[in-house]
Image (tube, rainbow, N blue to C red):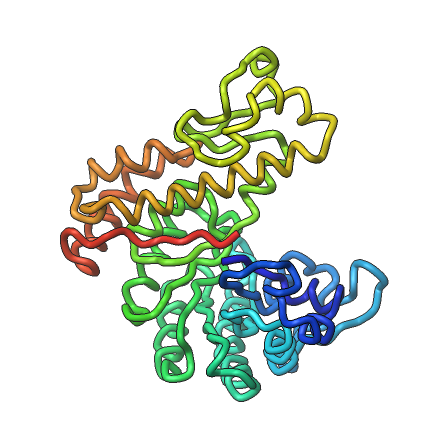
Amino acid sequence: MILGNTYHLENRPGSSLLRHLGGLSTFVDWNRSSLTDSGGFQMVSLLDLADISEKGVSFQSPIDGEQMLLTPERSTRIQNRIGANVIMALDDVVSSVCLEAKRFEEATHRTLRWIDRCIAAHQRPSEQALFGIIQGGVDLRLRSTCIEEMNTRDAHLPGYAIGGLAGGEEKDAFCRVVAQCASKLPVNKPRYVMGVGYPLDLVVCSALGADLYDCVYPSRTARFGTALVPEGTLRLKTAAMAADYRPIDDTCDCLVCQKYSRAHLHAKITKEPHAASLLTYHNIRYQMRLCDEMRQVKHFFDVKGDHLCKVLRIHSEGDNFTTVPRVCSEFCSQAVSKQHGPGMAARGAFIS
């Protein structure tokens, strides 16, 4: 599954053109599933250019300065024209490290009001799955309120997303929110944790019951010359790579590992943009293999916290590892036995 950005696609090339050409998948020659966001994340990423009200959010284009008013109705109809298989409801997104409690309260209740407008505006419910988004920051009370209200609209929502995370909050708070949401959302529908892409987070969230993820991490880290490997990360800009003729990862089946050495990529990484594309290809394949391995491990969920900790250690990075034992003991083993029972195949799919 690939993800398209509704706000940027509407700016260029435009949703009407995409509809005329057969939709996003046809436009990019992708014969598998696709998903579009609602444009809500731009309330965080383009906050200085956005004005949020009950009507919607008004953006000033970073390209030409033109104003765009994105309402729940317009966001939904743009996504109807883009034609992705999964579309997201417009939500009021607040950075998880915002210090204003009233802003989270306002955003949570506005998200619930907006979901009704998105449902009413959805013109292709039999062709496109509309996902509702759970907001509330790291406040578990607000998250519960949002989940309870979303569940009353369950007949109109084929899936759910957990939004407003992965923005710099403490790892413990992140895990508490994912654990709570995954345990209270319908078990027969997809649960999508938005903005998550670190290998450690993929493993933890899968253990807690999440199904889908998306993140710029594989491509962003590639632009800095870093590859994802089972041991953690491999920095190809370092001098040690200049005479290393091994592939990035001996166990990887991607075309980059089959054709190029570390030395070759080291020579290119600071001079040719093509090298970042090659690393992106490898990093996305790494994430896909990780999710595939989690699904294939027969008894992934039938483990004790200390065993799962060993699994997580392989995919932890830097200071993140200091939180892994707590994550395992407090959340993973308890949530797994409560939600899934022994021997269930692992969840997890990464959206590029």
